[in-house]
Image (cartoon, rainbow, N blue to C red):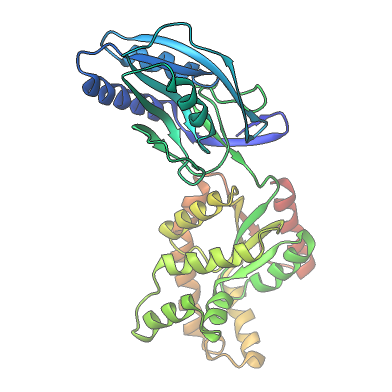
Length: 369
């Protein structure tokens, strides 16, 4: 993560990936122009890196020139474009290829076509390293496209944010959510996870997302996802991870202004943990920690048997079932413990003692994140 002025940016496209794409573009264009000597036109300031690296990879004779246009203020493309530096050579009958760093709204292209309309060129083609199809508003043909990217602001490899970032060899994407805390809360049956989740969500103003509650809500209200999940459950099949992720995504979207989330009951596997990471990354956020309440098995058995006297749950009244549930929990969380430990995000917390004492221990972990 880097900070430029008042904004944070996260890694997006590596220098190696950019280099590979630049080589592909150079090869494609070299094959298309044949024996002609093209004129490559870079648009300053952003395209200086693109042009420099491109011509090194273009192994045929060529000419290079630059023009300068202005179309950005801060992180927003403006409609007001002015020609600042014009062409100084005769391009009559020449093949001209514009080398752009990025094309989003296409406003710059409108000005480029206007400029070259009276130059009597043989052909005008557009090549761009980055392209935002969601933002593109024009009808001009783009002949060579390096990488299609989402409509989010990027910096690096010639692109800047108010003057900073052009010198970065890789590309970073703006991180729009700055201060969200997201936790995966785990604990064996009887550890008091539900009780602690309620305390933590109130203390830190987080949204508690219980997978079980989300499933029950969607099925009860016969949402599209709920009915889809029920169709698998009725056949005795596991609900696909993607259906669960889509449900969680809907919950996150409902609370887009939240300070963060406590995920309870998900993930259960490495694949699910990876899916959750991708979901949070799409929200410009991340899972900050997996916190697991740790309680001795015998204490858990005693707690659940005691709870079974009033809960009415059959699985709280049978000791053999309780022990199987505890064993199943450890089998599942052992995998996830390794997953989050590899990211330095696993935290085991002593779950024995008063409710208040356990809350203090959990809070200490969260406060230190």
